[in-house]
Image (cartoon, rainbow, N blue to C red; front, side, top):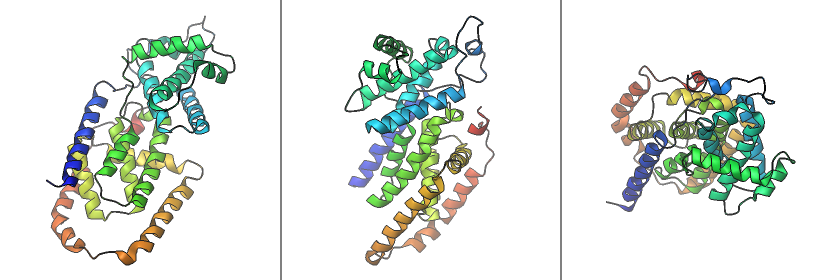
Length: 321
């Protein structure tokens, strides 16, 4: 067994372990729409001063989280971790009361970022900094109490598998140059960040989001020939037992990207940089057996196409709302 094969096996084992985690300990349900067990959480009592939190509240707090991590130069992936805490907390019994009150919801969202930074970043934020960012709405003691409540509700599960983590592991399965890897991850990360903000993805597996974003990036950049791309898509979807809604998720992510200001410029810039690098290095390219491999893979590709054109029984994220 070669070193590359050993690395591929280890990467696959890690992916499968993450898949198991997201289907069990880190699963999240739609806590705002439908479900008999959470209808009472959205009822507004007359004696409450604040209205219940909704999709717009969640979106605004996520935008705030991204602003904070950008200002502090933290990893943007930390926001995905924080929102995993928040969504699972709000889907729990303990989070129902918080969901009723927008002020408490804001405190919970800020506390989740505080906790995620403390665990996943080299530097932590003090509770009094969070209190200061709230402009006096909360005290450090309230932040600490909320943190304990959240951690207990999510059973101290603080290392969720994220979509961008799946993307990085999928990239390890492809033997690509540094510039190609950077281009793929730039486009994939952008899509996964949009998915964090979109409540329609709250109950969709992170592996499916990551895989869909990764495939969109590969298809946009055209780094891999179509036959190899279909082989990779079929192999990984079967290995990871991904849902058959991947195509719908790809479409949803693409639609989300096109709605963002400057998104087209981003894709063109990344693609142009990649093409420029490929042109500069083409003089050193070694002829391959690509045509022969394509002929050998044609039957395999036909089977792949047939698989993805089969009827889909899983609800798409577009209909999740």
